[in-house]
Image 1 (cartoon, rainbow, N blue to C red):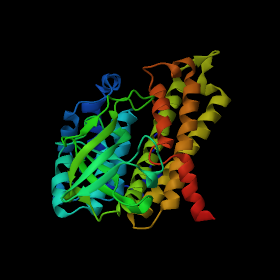
Image 2 (image 1 turned 90 degrees about the horizontal axis):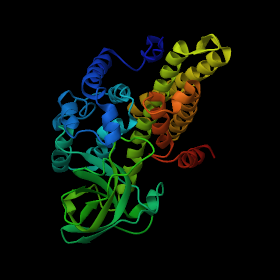
Image 3 (image 1 turned 135 degrees about the horizontal axis):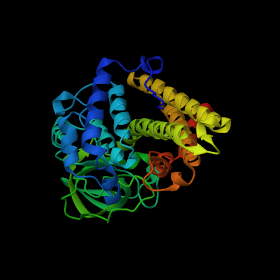
Image 4 (image 1 turned 30 degrees about the vertical axis):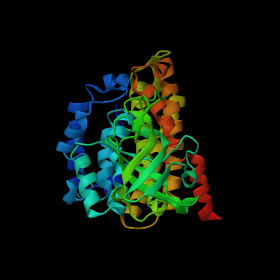
Length: 387
């Protein structure tokens, strides 16, 4: 028994034949290059670096990016199709690690020069280099305006000191799109620099051991008098905060999609298990309490997905959706919280065991309402629009 979410009724407004072709290509990639190995990669805490090049070769990394830099242009739903199919690997960590370029590259495309795009975008889209975004600091997670990493200009260089924490792909990134303080306190003194990992004074911690997202390498990055060329700065000095805020909208959309797919996979697993598991002389699906629980789960997933798709369509059309994407992220994460919890409950003791997908989904889910801006920060953003 299966629950197929890509129904014509729900998706025809957003996805066409070209999107379906992308889905088929990514599904084939996942089936061949990821699913046979994902359990081992989860235990190892990272996946092989070669996977970036393999993903680039079939167009996964370049989907939605300009052709001039090795990308394959397309609307926002090409990105969504790729993300949804990659999530069917069952590993949010792999999707986050393989997709760290999707939060590191947009600021370069938005604020960078042509030379910077050639230097810092093309090698990433080809899978030759790994890119990460470095915003969060040990002393201030969601408080971007309060960041403390300093970049003091000395002629043609910035001398960078400080550290970044919880950086996805941070352990082996070749370059990071990094927020630094170049001016006064607050939002108006922040700039963005592309810092390459071979810069003297740049170092990383050991890989973090996390509750979930095991397959993504996550680390703290340290800067000890790193001399970064001024020509690595993206846009004007002290104007980086606005680029960061713009970038957050894309990251929050991506996390909403991940949350919806985490819930979808948990729902599908629970439905299948309810049709197989015997209890008290009948299948779990024979109990009204189980059927109604699954109905509630399916309704929430459907509503969250459609809400997210609608906002994505508006973003793609150029409409500001800061309030709405914050709502979508919170709603998608709350839905995923409930659906993964209920899926584990339906599985009973097996849902708590390693080797069952719902156990991994339950762990991976927890970061989604923290990353990209916490639930509480999303509510503050929303409140600014409704009061």
